[in-house]
Structure formats: structure tokens, C-alpha cells
Image 1 (tube, rainbow, N blue to C red):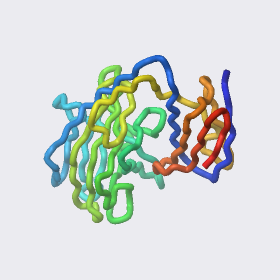
Image 2: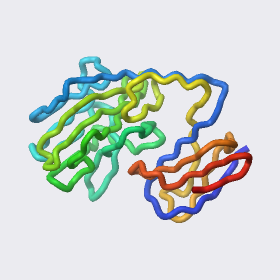
Image 3: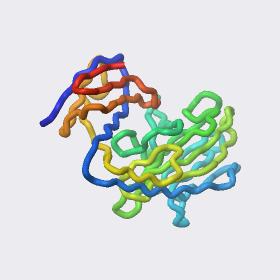
Length: 237
């Protein structure tokens, strides 16, 4: 039976919600992590996320003053569209990267990571993560790359990267090791309206579990709402 909870919130324009619900299945995560000597290229860094000798993304200056993320083929990065410019997110560690939780842009819309001293989410970024989607044949993989970018947007450093080698499995920014979940599996809830204005209704076909915490994040990975449900009672903090 579908269960609904209606919550009141201040206005937010994007959100991420992941519900971790118990099942009888085991979910295996296989992260492939690559640590490289810090690379500071003068123009272009060809990122081979899955180490198959093919560049999956180009991190490069174009036309010498904008730091761009250019997915190759059907690959994609996460970001947003603002003022007609596609801006890749500069994420903190510990952020889930999944198809359902992030907006993706492919090679048709290369992203401006940093331009000058004020344009782009990556201006002056240190140890931030770019969320990536890799398409290989009929399979989809999720990964990240960690970078620094100068405050003047005139140089950048690539530090390391990783991807989840199990198709369609999520990965967490900064995750470098394999994780085996004994029971949980990520379920996709329904939330409407989207964007949220003043209220939102959350639905889930499996119902809302007792003794669980449900958290809503905005597109900047800030926690904006949390619901603790224990012994059949709902508490909001």
C-alpha cells in the first residue's frame, strides 16, 4: 500500500532524497579507485575513469580562460543550468551519486567549471568532487574525480578518481573502498510537486519504516529537512 507523508518546507528549487529500506537481498558494491600523482596540466587532462585507455572526459581550458568539463560520447557530468551556462557541481565528500539524485549533462552541453574569479562552482575549489556518469555499451556506471582549482581559474590539479564497477550502483564522493551491504537497498520515493514550493508530499510503495531516519538535501548538499520515525510516531527536526 502506498503511504504518504506531507511536510512543510521553505522554498527550495532542487533536492535529493534517498531512502534506505531493508530487504532480504544482498547488495554488493565494487569500487575501482585510482590514486595518481597530482596532475596539473597546462591545457587538458584526459580522464580515463575506468582505465581502458580511452578518455571518458576532458578537463581543459577553452579557449584558454575557461576551465571546462567535456564528456566524451554519451558520458555525463552533474551540474545545473544558470544564466544560459552549464555549471558542473563542486561537491563535498560523502554525497551519493545516483541517476535519480542528480541532474546530468552530456557532450551536447559541456560544462563551465570555472571562469575568471566569479563564474562557476569550481572557482577556488579545494578537494571538491565532480560527479560523473560513464556509459559503456549498454551499462551505466557512476564515479567521481577530485580536483583543486585556483581562485583565478588559471590552473587546476587532478588528484584521484573512482567509479562503481557494478552497473547502476551508486557511489559516494570520496569513496575508495568496496562496501558490502548486508540487507539495505536504495529505493526511489516519489516527491511532488517538484520544485518544492511550500509543501511537498513524499510517497513510497513499501511504506515508511519504523526506527528509520529520512533526510532531504538540496542541490548544494545541505540538509534542509529530517524526519525521524520511531515506534510509529513521526518527529521532525
